[in-house]
Image (tube, rainbow, N blue to C red; front, side, top):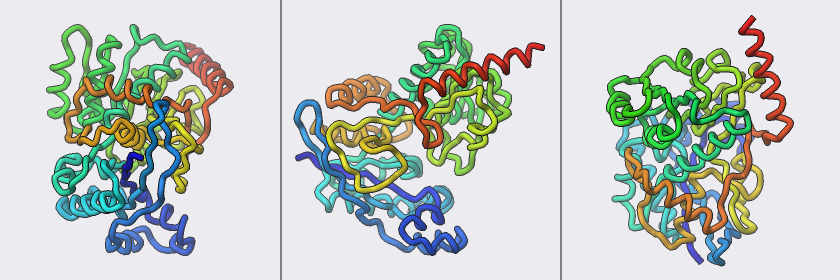
Length: 361
């Protein structure tokens, strides 16, 4: 039996703490954050039933790291890194051979490098498989809306980050025009120069203006607030939201029926898996970052696979092949907790065509 751990954290102190302690929703977010800051990392649940197509089996543990996104970004880096390292040690104490860093635990500091130095087990951010599934999902969704990669304009929001830059490098192979969007042009330009030969690469800090040109959008920022608003999107476009908390405003689903928003990295896990914890996904599915940790455990690859700001592009193909070997695959599309079916696609196509006619008149 292979063993792994995966570190999770609350996206909102009031919402997530109140799921276990209902009275917590009566308290201000800041007070709850002050309370959870004092709590040590702890095992949240035991994960059972993962069984590969090869016959290999794995079990794991969700480890809670009690900090919110705002705290991960606002507290001293040394304090945050120490708390994440302690969470990784809890996984080690449970018997895990590898631990995955979920959500903001993979973003702060040096993206897992210091954490890996502080424990005696392997550490991975899961970002490599996140890149693979985000691209696969975006390209499949684009095909459903008749968007051809060979003529499409694509945009990466958060292009200077590890996931964003890797998505840009891979997507640039297939599209003639790519917009890199971030807060700092100086951080975008080196990537743009690398990708420019043979295609048009644009750097931008203006999300709204840039997305109005994009047929395909992959968004993966570390923002704690929504960065993509309804008015910014092109009719008939596909937006793959990989970020947690979400980059796409919930208003998009309400007022823009002419665009398709999908959650990036929803993966079907092989076996009769039971997470014993509800993180908002259908049964037997997980985030891609979680799945990468499971895949490496099933493969017996107890090594620090995805660490730091620069992902190895060659590993994207490797982890995709390992996923297929063990029976992991995309679990269909979801949009704001709802499944995207054929009827949804038809409605988006019809609304997009209507929006285009209105704009042309």
